[in-house]
Length: 132
Image 1: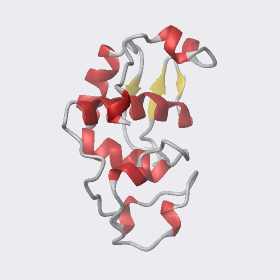
Image 2: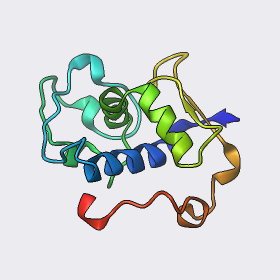
Image 3: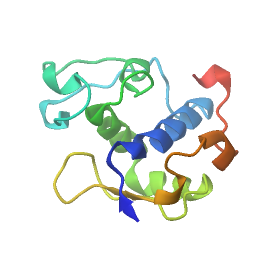
């Protein structure tokens, strides 16, 4: 097991898109970013003013890796639900234990899948084109 850093964002994005496909998450729905949501690191959301309400489509880390966006998604899906779904994705040794960039609360991820083609490793990670 290794600390996950930004690699955890890949399966988080897959879970988000599967939630869209299942109509649990609406890409056009809005999420309000509070000052307490902002964390340093990748992306620009932490530099914008509190109260911004972008759509989930704008927030999700599809084009740019983003710690604040990942944390908003962790809040929306819930750590327990995320971990249950990681198991369903075949990530049996991967656990999200908290938000990104917060001391003593991060995730652990199984290291052997890093650097390999995701589609070959995780065929159950299908997300329909309509969900993206």
